[in-house]
Amino acid sequence: MREADEVLAGVVAGGLAALVATFVAPLNLNTVVIASMIVLMPGMALTNAFSELTSQHLISGTARLFGALATLLKLTVGTMIALIALQLLGLEPQVRALRPQPAWVEWGAVVTASWAFAALFRSGRRDIALVMAAAIAGYQISRLGGQWLGSPIGVFLSALVITVAGNGYAQWRNRPGALIRVPGIIMLVPGSTSLRTLLVAVQQQDVVAGQQAAITVVNVLLALIAGLLVGNLLLPARRSL
Image (cartoon, rainbow, N blue to C red; front, side, top):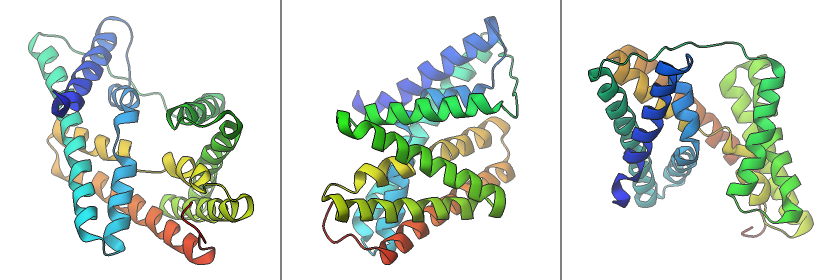
């Protein structure tokens, strides 16, 4: 049954979101489904896979890459099973997107997500504030850089700064630099974008739309990996922390 966990998660998330959109209130359906499965997204696995491939670790990189793709496919299959089943029953979810969101919604979501990631990573009590600060900083640097110079450059700058900060923290405090690196880039990895790509391609039966979204995923991945590599060049980690 473990192989079907992601499929079942997609069925439950897609089914509940569609039922709410049908009987309660209109929803931005894909966004709600993706948000409900965010902890299952293989964004970090995709990033690690491409990082290992660029480091010539071909076997482990390929294994991680196809594992991440398999996860995305299973989440997509589960979601589409739920949506198509409800469609066959004659239910039509009411889809509505509200953009842009007020600033307080965005900041509330960022703070809540950073706290959730601290809990997900099982951070110690003394590290919770550091993990939250790293997650918020990574997001904010990417956002501001994206507004000024474009989204890929924003992701690159964020990954660069977070990597240097993590390596510097490891050298200064003799503690794991991953306390900053991992939460700092967790909101940048393209897991949700990858799933949205597949959902759009399947729902709209539009290869062009899927290709455009896939290019966005690749751009984010390349920018993220470039930032990590350049950051390690500027301030290498002296120890495996």
